[in-house]
Structure formats: C-alpha cells, structure tokens
Figure 1 (cartoon, helix red, strand yellow):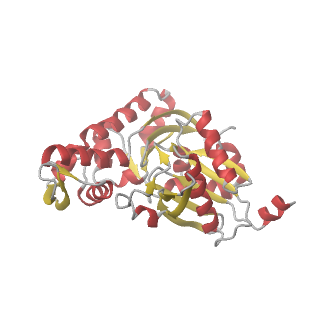
Figure 2: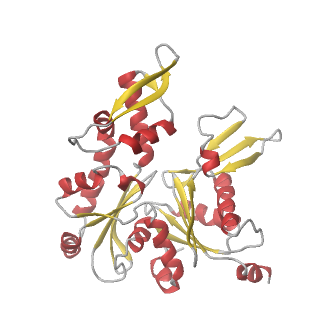
Figure 3: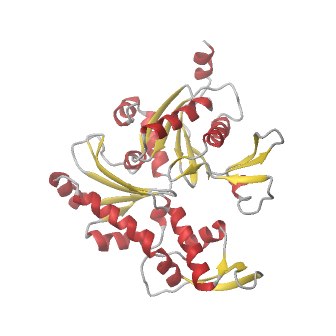
Length: 344
C-alpha cells in the first residue's frame, strides 16, 4: 500500500548514468540536471563513509582534498565500481528531481553500455532499487542515443550510432528495436584526459591534474591537423625541480597525444562495419552514421571519421544530451520502453 501511494506521488525518471556526467530526465519536464558523476566522502572514525557533496560541488574538490576526504567517481568504464557510493549518488538525484522529498518511489530507466555483464546489470538494478526506485528498466546507451537522435529504431532499416562517452565508446547497428551488431571499447573522454597528462609529463616534465587535462581537451583539443593552431598556457608541478611551473601547449601537441586512443575508437567503428549484414550496410551508406556523446563535440572528430570510413557522418543536434533524451522518450511511451528495454 505504501509503495503504491509513494509511486502516485513520484515522477518517473530516466537517468543517463555516465562515467563522467549524470543526466536526469523527468517525465513531463525534460532534462532537469546534468552534473558530474562525482561524490565527495569523508572517512568516519567507525570505518563508515559519510557523503559530503555530490555532482558539481564534489567535482570542485577533485585533486584538492585533505587525506580524510576523497572525491570518488563511482562509475568506471560505464559500469559501477563502488556500489555504496553509486547508491548515495542515485538517491541524491532522485530526491533532487522531487524537490528533496523522501516519500518517493519512481519508475526509473537507466542507460548502460551494451558490453555490460549480467553481474553488472544486477548491480545497477540493485543500486537503483536501494536508492528508492519501485521499478527499474535498463536501456543500452546506443539504443537510447538512436531514439534521442530521432532515428526510426523500430523499422526494418539499418541505423548506425557511435556514442563517445566518458568511459566507453559504444558502436551499434540497430534495426527493428534490437541491436543487430555492436562493439564497445573502454576508451572515451577519460582516456583522452589521461593521454594529455602522460604526454605533458613525458614531453615537458610537467605534472597536471585531471581537471586541467579536461580543460585542455575542451579548449584546444583536436584530432586532425588544420590551418589554425591554438595555444594555451597551462600550470602544473615541475617533475625536475618540484616547484609550480607554467608552459604553453599547442593544439598540434594535443592532437599528437590523442593519436592512440582515437585510433582505438576508429578501429572499433571499422570492426563493427565489417560485421554488419550487407542489407543493413546498404542502409548505412544512404543514411550515414550518427555521432553522439560528449566526445562527439571534440573538434574535427566527425571529419576524421568521415575520412576513415568514407561514409556520411552526422553529428547529433545535441550530442551531449542525446542518450538522456532517448531514454526520456522511451519513458514517455511504455510500448517503446517495452520494445527496447534489456531483458532481465
């Protein structure tokens, strides 16, 4: 009786539980928040952990906390790495969607990578149920991205989607509300940040943090040589002298740093195309490939993919929110949700 009553007071949610960012869609209201998937916790004397901050506030603490406080990213490579902290993060987003109310039991749709194992699926479901959900549906991220990009996923035609997220890049060919062939590589925005950190350390003997690497990627990051060269002043710790130091980094150097992870993504796309049935491959030639996810906004990434695949590449209208919007559209239509949900 309580569950039914709490369910009546709740708004259904779709959550894009990403490695780098979590987006929350509320039925009838659209996307209400987009925050980093970071939780700041403090170690208590009895050995337990107390949540201090979630999202943007917690991300401000990354690399800047004393020993007793840790800024944790509970999602690694698109799957749950810390069950307890993920549950706390989900509870925060559920309450935020309901203006802080604790008396809620919403239906929740959660987006997960297609490479997820049955154990990892169960961990996502149990985390959401423990955080207060009355019912949990899982949708593969490429499927949600295709719905968000307004592709006809339920028709017998081939649609190809590349979703470049923070932890993984998922490539899938979809037809008749099913993923026909897919491939995932655990390379995304985080690996690009890591590539910048390693390059600057190797080339300039300078140690920079994750947040600085992300700013470099967004500001001057590129994957192709172009006529215009951008530069940026970056600050870090000199590995030789051990003192703070500032250098100037160019966009060409960043492109060089990105070479290995970007080619891993391209190889994954080509492998998926090789395994695509010929009739669906013919549809992809006509329709092109849809590029979504935060990594899709990297400068010249669509041009590089076009050059490598010789196929039309269409960047989604809003690549960053495509997965959350697709999950939200499935939430709005129970028939579509039933068709595209992963089987328990």
